[in-house]
Image 1: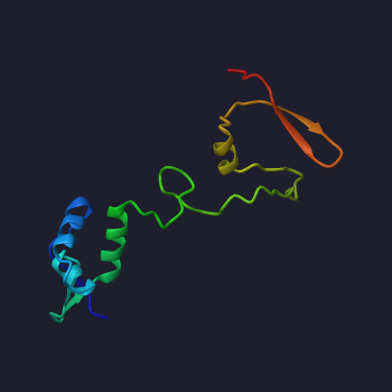
Image 2: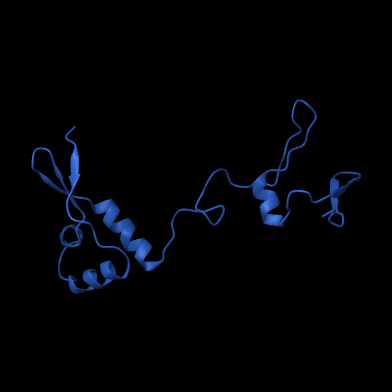
Amino acid sequence: MAKKKQSAEPLTGAALLAKVKTLNTLSKTQKAKACGYTTVTKGGVERVNLLPFLNALLEAEGIELDSKVDGNGRGGRTTTYRVQVHANGNLLIGAAYTAQMGIKPGDAFAIKLRRKHIQLQQLDSVH
């Protein structure tokens, strides 16, 4: 497969939106090309990168398709609100749950065993 070289830096954000609005009579492929979303292969063939162009348009419009678990964009497994006891008898509550509840390292809890569930009651901080 031929290695691609990026041509000029493609437009993003408000500049991309403004440029696309001026090109309303062109096809999406022609708009992507006009906004710099092309690469040139080793063989000298110019290719239009339509998917990155469309993703940049969505991002410029503020449309988020990918879910983000926390503010830094890291994904991962989704919270299911179910846990299992590990082979060593430990019950682990994951970081996604503790972050959602605002629990910090050092916070203390009383464990109350109820008929059909376990209740964690937060105690006053030791700090």
